[in-house]
Image (cartoon, rainbow over all chains, first blue to last red; front, side):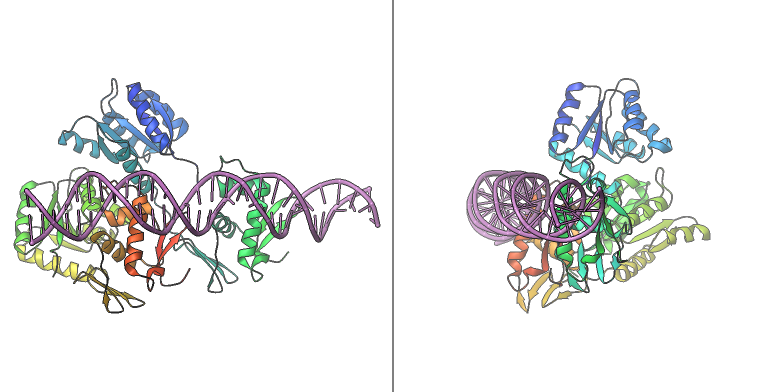
Length: 231
Length: 231
DNA sequence: TGCTATTGTCATATTTATGTAACCTAAACG
DNA sequence: CGTTTAGGTTACATAAATATGACAATAGCA
């Protein structure tokens, strides 16, 4: 999978931040903390978190005010924000949503609810582009149905081989080193042997069969390449 | 007709909402109300109304803007929208239709006109599978009678399994993640474990029996897919 | 209210996928 | 030619993901 999502927690009370951080980290998110709007702003500019959890009540610039400000600035306009509040006041809720906040959680909340909402907002905020099927010489990969066919016949692939093939088919005629492939297909922060790539290349070729395995080409001393042109 | 259609009325003026609600309820519709785009959005995700009546002019996010946003997100993309407006401006009308609005009513309007248009849009815009039976390889789901049959024999399904199957049959050949399924089948603001999906998949498969359980396919590392093509 | 169907969650099997090491082969090179 | 080196293959232990069965809480309903 891709790198874990990074969440910035903004709350003036350290214990609360900590609690939230723990919950999120258990759910596989990476957390940053800020105890006021100013610190938060720097962190957002600097780190570009995927999501901001913002406490409603804070000394200095209030959460609502801060959210509004984030929305105004083009650079920060599309960072999703979830507001945390102890208020059950409906008016406040409306004001908050008008400030362009993506969701709203009323304290106290369960870690599960937090994570669920966060996930929902992240998913909504990341509209996937229209993914078109790619075809090369009878070999078709359809990202939507998550299927690969060779001349109409289904091809069985493990998840990693699927991603590998998908990467290749969308980056044809270019040689990639093993470590580049690890970065692009496995994701930046995983440690695996480079030779592991070989094994997956092997599995991919095998799955493609004689008819298509020529597409996955070895570039000696460099790595691999996907191309319809024969070497 | 089985269940009455549910209509969400979005307008910032309570009296107007009330008036419309009364008219619609007399015509046998079930009404929900929201006074701004944000509240409306939550309600749509959560309740999945069959239709949205949207006021053009609203403080905060305007109706037109909101309609556009609804269309963007797959989850809400096929909720029919009728725009209510006091403007007779032709340009606005064009803009509205470009936003994917299904119809347009100019205030003031008679309850009769409202109901007539609403009915028309519902009839026209109702996607197959919501009203029309769907059949795949001897497996038939009839939304109207709320029945599922396999080669004529009735299939017993719990409510959730029914909705799941209905969603699948109207969205075939497409891989969905567990959280997408939760969004689409359970509704947006419900917090359940992702693994719960597995259990319902299991129940659905079991109910479909050996003859048809191949239709519900596991996509390893991703989620599930409904397809008549064998994997 | 008592009873039954439905649901969401767990704990526990099963099945798959993955990364590595060991070994094999074929180029490149002197 | 013999060596060296990079890549190909295979087998295997282990990690991950999914399937399954059981159970307690709930929601409906008679």
